[in-house]
Image (cartoon, rainbow, N blue to C red; front, side, top):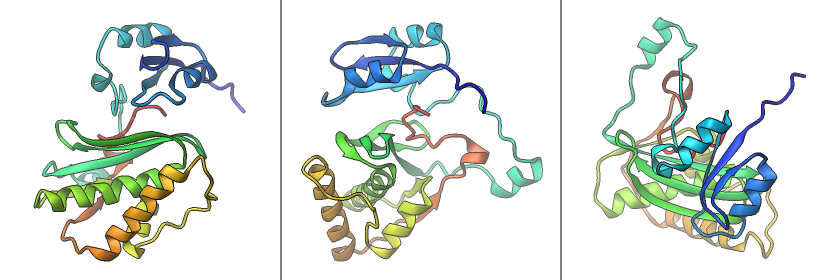
Length: 213
């Protein structure tokens, strides 16, 4: 196996702000910090430059993305429908610190965000983000479609259930409280919103991505 590439972590909002050279150091700054803002970078200089900027200018962006799909494949897939919103989740560990959000697909303007929570999984976060997005659009009587890059979340929403194997405990109670609310919402509400799979291989990371991969 090849040597794992070193990453540098910028923390805009946390117990201490700055650039940290290990995930453990970064995690110490964001753990139990409401609204923590952080992102990984490939070089120290990039992380340091980002610290001088705004968190929202960096999340959901991956420099130098170039699709590996053929021209014919890209032509068949087409371009994203910007008459939409996008949702995504991030989990540092599985389970681990989890959060999710929804944004306008074109502008990346944040529409809602929940977390970080002390314990969750990426699948749970994706599910909660999708249901939150459906509820958000219905509340605003919007005909926008909604993008997610999670087939699992799409399946759970379709079945009106959350099939996570994460055992319930005191630490993840806030997350499971939201899960229970989401499942109840799906059972009690109808919606006309079209849910569409985001084509990551063609378009890059979904606009709601937290940029921590």
